[in-house]
Image (cartoon, rainbow, N blue to C red; front, top):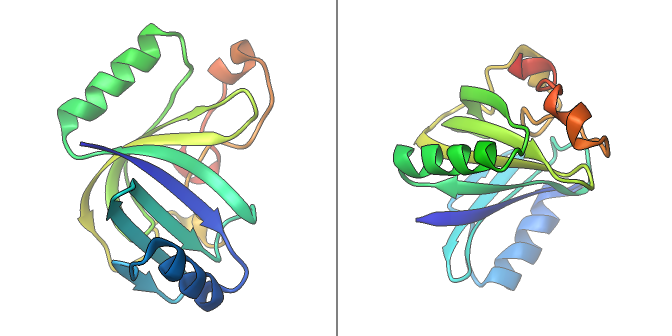
Length: 157
């Protein structure tokens, strides 16, 4: 199963939790002092909000998969279609252990393609990630040839 992922940066977590709980008619499945996440089947989305995002509003988007094979299929498709990908690999981020890759769209919005293996008690183990939401490539409106050379920012290298 594939699920759309949306991470939104917020200033006031409790106010945002109240808003999204009402909008989605559901309570978060994960709640931390700086983070909340809803996993919905209708619509099929993983919505996360946090006070850690460097961007208020849409921080990044993603496609979450359940199985390793699904992740490999998406990575192969993106590579075959010449979409430059940065491989983060296995990481501890957003209170979860995941396997991730990143692409950046033409508007500079990062998209993560990932599979979550298990929950974690800490937001991240990346030392440089103390004040950021995820280990995403830097936002850019660079051409594809430049993006192909792009490395993940800070904690992903």
